[in-house]
Amino acid sequence: MPSSPPNQLATESDFRFRCIACGHLGDSAGQDFRCAQCGDLLEIVYPRWRESMPNAEHLKSTWRTRRMSSSAIDRSGVWRFRELLPTLNNDEQPITLREGNTPLYELPRCARLTGMTRLFAKHQGMNPTGSFKDTGMTVAATFARRAGFRWVACASTGNTSASMAAYAARGGLHSLVLVPEGKISWSKLSQALDYGSLTCQLRTDFDGCLRLLQELVREAPVYQLNSINPFRLEGQKTLAIELLEQLDWQPPEHIIVPGGNLGNSSAIGKALLEMHELGLISRLPKLSVIQAEGANALVRTLREAAGKRLVSVQAETRATAIRIGNPASWKKAANVLEATSGACEQVSELEIAQAKAEIGAEGIGCEPASAVTLAGLKKLLQQGFVKPNETVVLALTGNLLKDPDYTIDFHRGELFEPKDEAADAAMKKLRRPPIVLDATLDAVIQTLERAEKP
Ligand code: F0G
Image 1 (tube, helix red, strand yellow):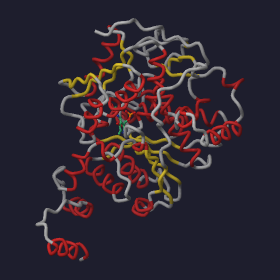
Image 2 (cartoon, rainbow, N blue to C red; image 1 turned 90 degrees about the vertical axis):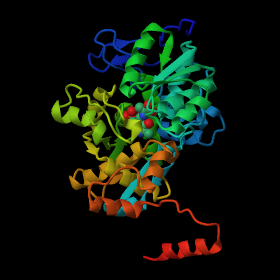
Image 3 (cartoon, rainbow, N blue to C red; image 1 turned 120 degrees about the horizontal axis):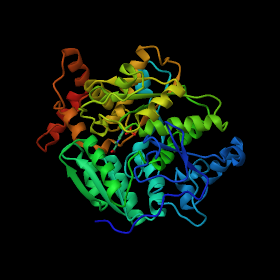
Image 4 (cartoon, helix red, strand yellow; image 1 turned 120 degrees about the vertical axis):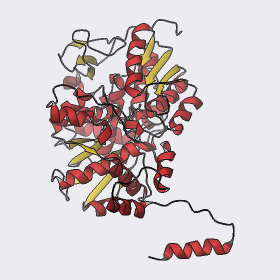
């Protein structure tokens, strides 16, 4: 049993916790990160920004200058933007693995395919543990250590656990992972094991793991590192800040992200609104969220309940990272979609598989959950919500290597039975199954010749 009672999560510094529903402001947060008055989620706000924030040009030049620095805090693609994050104490070093600093790629083939003029991918799969989670984890793990916790914990579909395990190890913290048995990829599980987590495979789904974690943090001095933890979302904001810097502060018309537990879309939306308020950008991009049809709680919440109450679902999808039916941050996500006039769509398993192969064929690749963005873009184009001449950025959240089984099953034609011939033909063109040959020159040359034939 973890011992050593934690310190209060009191803030001595510049930020406060605000309830997203009743607006109650507090200097501290309980272990469940919920409002003591009404029980809703908390977000971090910065009441002193108005009087103390340097102007936009000064911020941009400070962040640019730090790119030349060799100190660990400046080399982090998260802490480089620390003016927009909870402040560290004077001599405090963050737990960092040089996260962030992720590339913005153009996707010329996917642009041609969809009829777009310009299409970009912000590849968060290039983070140290292979997913966007690292940008939030560096902040939340640092504040867990500051609060005096020995144990950190999360429920996860795999990426959060891999990231938490790494940052806990770097920061000298113990970590407890709760994952659904049989429903996460081996790659992600192997990361948690190697980084030294106490890893529990529970006989339930992600939603069951998260429910149990909520009970656990009320009973034991364990600090939760799910995206309910608002420090995570502060770190994940930097995807948007770094992206805008890469675009020379010219906002794209659209940013499209996958939706699971809905922390990431909430974080990106928060960053866009804050950057707009601080004068870093002159207009807001539309932020859209795409879900798998089998895990479409936000889509249904907006369509069937006008965003007023959560419509949860029994989640099922091969994109296991977003196999979530009861997303914790649904209200935050609904708020930022409304504030940025974004859309919310769902895509089928077939559409996800096809989009993933198309991103792969660009020489970039991503995990299935990330590919919902390209599949969703196609729908938003059809609906006229996105115009072909607008600039669109897809947030690719995880690395191709995170789920090799999916990719291999796809290329071998074993992922699923296509429903119709047209779909089968479209998939066939994208499949590149491995070819087993005798080890002779002839066999290889013949194969090469066959490949050359139209
Ligand atoms: N993409 C990937 C690769 C993910 O791992 C996740 C979430 C998402 C998208 C969705 O982001 O939850 O912020 O809406 N993975 C979590 C995990 C839940 O446990 O790794 P979200």
